[in-house]
Image 1 (cartoon, rainbow, N blue to C red):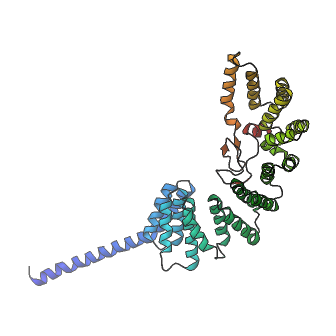
Image 2 (cartoon, helix red, strand yellow; image 1 turned 120 degrees about the vertical axis):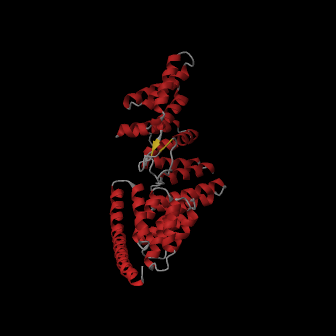
Image 3 (cartoon, rainbow, N blue to C red; image 1 turned 90 degrees about the horizontal axis):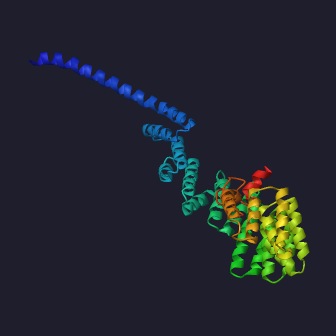
Length: 391
């Protein structure tokens, strides 16, 4: 083929190839421009329908198409954190912090999200470092102080927890008096453990300044007075609880009744236990009252008192106590009674726990702070069966 013939064949072919390439490029560009919104809306739909796995896949697709989308990276980081994938959340927020073009306000926001990743992931030292940087930022100061309060309390750094709580009260108008009182009580218990009773008394005074109605502070004040040999002062502290917060008497019934007995006030102790039990029924207080009645007035009087209380406030836990009293009075003579008591004990085991009024976390022993939600004073001093019966 000569040159002219080749030219007339190649020119249309080149034209056709260019036209095809141009159309392909336009289609790709259109797909790139339209793909991001489609994937974004699809991800939002998955998120609204509680399908976080598919939502994350859709958002990752959008992020690949447009890596400059800041809000999308926040959404991805929050989703990863919500799923417990803290390492992926940290990578997303670190990517944002590494961008040189990130505005100052967005950089602070990214740092706050990163600190939350560390906090939720249990890396408290890194979380604390991040929130400390945000304390001086007016837009993030209060959130940072709240996070630092939680970090210090979790790490049992009570002095710094008190400082953070008081800053929130002064500047944010928040109320943390209950928590502050407990922080002082924790410090007082530490002082008692090392024998520094003077410091312990001072800390309990500060606890009562923060929260005049702090039952825990009054209980500890009585314990310290008794440890120092001042049983009269101990009785005064504990009687104040019986007057102001009688539902908590079950926590100190043993100590208070023993102190009153040692002071020659046995009848006063029994009358107090029975009077409070009448107005504030409690299986724990019932146990104390029955034991003291048996000890001071005989087994028959204790069993009679227990039966009377069961007629007034029937409960599975109370009936299990009655069976225990009867089994103790005639050990081994009634195997069916022992079998019945074992069956009731198994059924009553779950009912004998304490339940947090905030999150519902259950524990076998009473606690001033919930291990689940970390709330203070969230456990009523009553067992689950008593709470359900009252409800």
